[in-house]
Image 1 (spheres, rainbow, N blue to C red):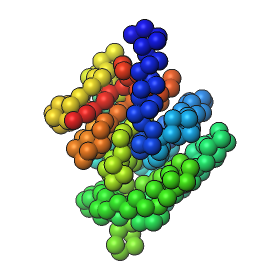
Image 2: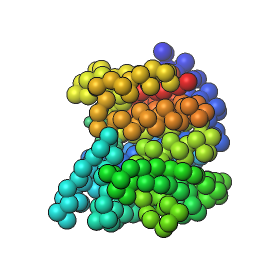
Image 3: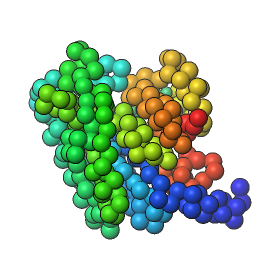
Image 4: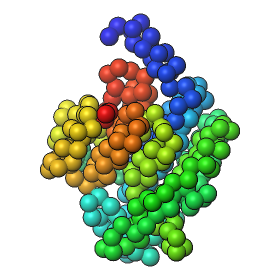
Length: 278
Ligand SMILES: Nc1ncnc2c1ncn2[C@@H]1O[C@H](COP(=O)(O)OP(=O)(O)O)[C@@H](O)[C@H]1O
Ligand SMILES: [Mg+2]
């Protein structure tokens, strides 16, 4: 596409998305390389305060949690991409997530935005129940109360949420951040769910970025879930995109953390990662 046409398209998208909700998810991997955090934060601030999009951030911890567990002599284990979480592990998860949360909030504030950090226990954002006994204190979401989030977005804040929820008995539960992001996107009738991750998107061969799958329909995504090339952390991402699109979110995206991929994906026709639509 020539530059003029591309700019026109970007302006069209910018108009389309004003006042819409984008739920944007990333993990501790934004801190993996110097510079990634700054780029991502600057893109979030641009989307919120220049493009007028209601940006809501949900974050996990990923490898930061595993390495902190390691320091305390705890072994990280995953079943179907979900972290097995006992009481000790939950303490580490809480510590890492709340620390990371405040770093994100600080960075947004520092970049001229206004952010507020909360766990999903605040305002009963996520009520949850234990998924299965072998996963321990891991929750699936039963209910979402988005009132608090809406209060913040209406008043110029970017809410930054980490997905610790509670069940009816006062247990705190670790909720997969990809799943948390999609449930929240559904509840907010979001325009987009955007999942940022260290790889460029869904790859047919996870070691080769040239095998990127740029677009999938809902039914194609469901079929992909059954295929062997999706393992580890990618599985909850595809599940979340399916949940989001099935409940009415217009599109769900899995994209890389680097090179302003988020702006490319949102404001260009070609995009940068994997997009799932109905
Ligand atoms: N088909 C696939 N395409 C891309 N990545 C995949 C695929 N299957 C598994 N993965 C793995 O999923 C990882 C992303 O999940 P995860 O490590 O949980 O990231 P995050 O920290 O962003 O949640 C990738 O880094 C990659 O190693
Ligand atoms: Mg993950």
